Length: 175
Image (tube, rainbow, N blue to C red; front, top):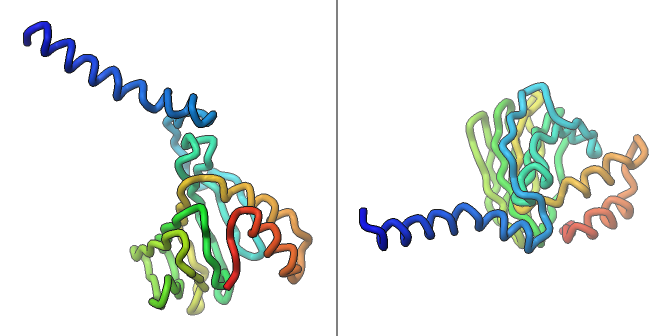
């Protein structure tokens, strides 16, 4: 390789290598670092009956995404709502989850995935007789702060006005 070609290729590689650092400096977010999270690890939150184990949060991923595992009893679900900030992906590992995204309703079973883009109404509910385990990813990150606030609400039937206000701070509205 000649000198000119080497410099051109090296400069491109160096530029690609430092881009994440420059982007994190611009956004004020910590760059993503490698992380391994075992099945039994993570922060567990009871978010109004949705038992979530947070595996990756914004501080782990440079603000790119948050991922949690839902362990949910039959009959538990989330009312129809719309996100204005984040997209979500739902992957069922165990059980059956009825999900509606936009105008399409379907049953997700083990191995099935659904994508709910921001600005599209969606809802889900565990159906059947078996507890469901579902991996949910949201991107960009940030929604985990809302889940912490919801988990702090008193036990018992939730005050929908408080829930709607907390969700509204995250740009989520119920429809």
